[in-house]
Length: 233
Picture 1 (cartoon, rainbow, N blue to C red):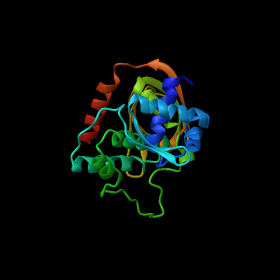
Picture 2 (cartoon, rainbow, N blue to C red; picture 1 turned 30 degrees about the vertical axis):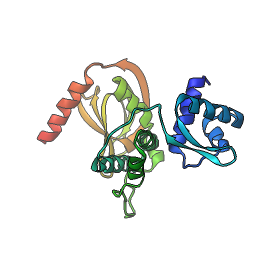
Picture 3 (cartoon, rainbow, N blue to C red; picture 1 turned 60 degrees about the horizontal axis):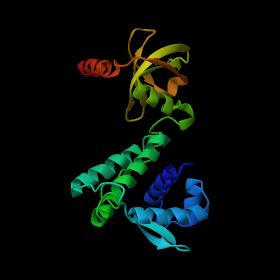
Picture 4 (cartoon, helix red, strand yellow; picture 1 turned 135 degrees about the vertical axis):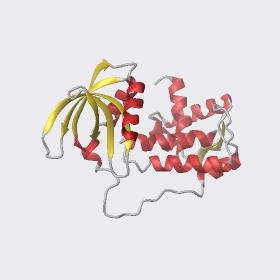
């Protein structure tokens, strides 16, 4: 692993793991030896990161000099913490992990008082257990990473999709957006088979495969048109 990548991963671990975090835990998190952690901690301190703690006790990131300072009002901090907490309830492990990373990075750029505000926000998200899944069980949701990257890259996907009767068809789609509804995850798309807009329920997508075929730069215009049609309905 290149040294800059190793130092970046160490900083991110210090941002996200509960402090104080020992060298052994940091080594396991970043995939290097404990001896390397000691050397890298000193390198980060030399570069300007304010890292407290010592060998045998653990380390904590007091102030992160690698990220520019941010200025948020107290209510903006509450909104940020609440929004990221909601993301963690969406049933997508990649997004949940990303939300935790965003919160840690933002907190690292704030003054100490604001850090306490964001880490101990008064606004919380809680879902009462009503016996129903907010989203379908994870084993029945397709690889959202492939779908998300298809949207980002504006590349067509091949999917195997089952209708409400369980009958499956092969489709080529242009993925436009992933929408998290109350108890349903859907993919807004242009269906090349039907030559029209379609809303595909994630739990009915049995298989998904990237094709590498670009439909750029049509995604934004198509999504705007689809959303307008949905609003009219």
